[in-house]
Amino acid sequence: MAAYTLPEGFNDFDMFAFGTALLVEGLLGFFLNSIAALSFLLVREQRTPSNFLVFNLNIADLMLNVNGLIAAYASYMRVWPFGQEGCINHGFEGLISIYAAITLIALISWDKYHYYCTNQPLFWATSGTMCVMVWVFAIFWASFPLPSFGWGEFDFEPMKTCCTLDYTKGDRNYITYMLTISVFYFVFPMMMMQSSYSTIYAYFKKTHKYRFNTTIPVRTLLLTWGPYVAMCMYACVENAKLVSPKLRMVLPVLAKTSPIFNAILYSFGNEAYRGGIWRFLTGQKVVDKRK
Image (cartoon, rainbow, N blue to C red; front, top):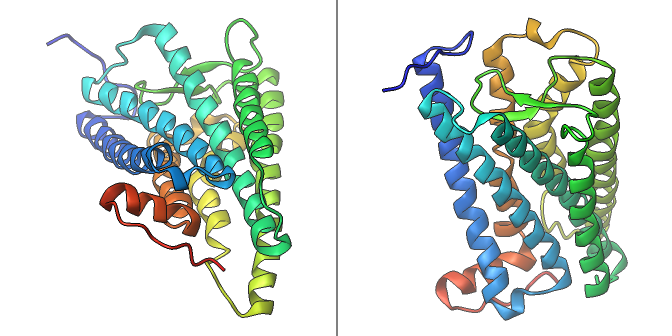
């Protein structure tokens, strides 16, 4: 077996434990999102403009699942086997999936607002254009930490088996990039979701027909990504290395559970989507009872 040096603050059990967590959440998220995505592709009735937003969310989450599974493999190897260029590509792919997924769950909340409160249907032209723009902007913003641009930088997480935006430097490049990204990909989506679901709740309260719990989507986003964003913001004002390496590793592992929650909330828990999943799995048609 090739010799390896464990990263500071971690022992063999830590590497195994974090690797197992990444493996389990990656496989479960991949399984759930694969079923949801295949149901969209193979069930004709499933292919609607609103469901196209969910389908793109499935794709973004599948990308993050693959990102986590690569990290799990490296954790079991006890070393990153793909070199510095592989690290950059890993971080780049991860950022694209994160930016796309958070934007899409905000757009889904906007679509739900129009469905329940204004009765305005989403058309294919609008849905398709929004999804194209989501991916274009995700790639655009994720490109800046690449060496060719240098606004931010990709580097290893504390366990040295996965890569992301390097928040340990805390220099001007990092601070300006992180503040910009936090506004566009956390604050704005959170505001859109809060506004949309608050209005939907008011409509449900008025009609006495509660279709779903309108507080769960925002809480889920805060639970999965809130601690990691807080860590990144802390790194703007203090030395992030003062925080325990294990704690800094827990945060991205927690964030990578988001594809599981997204699949449950927006695919399997979505009245407009779960019928198509049921038909894909069983061949039985389910009548949409949202109205």
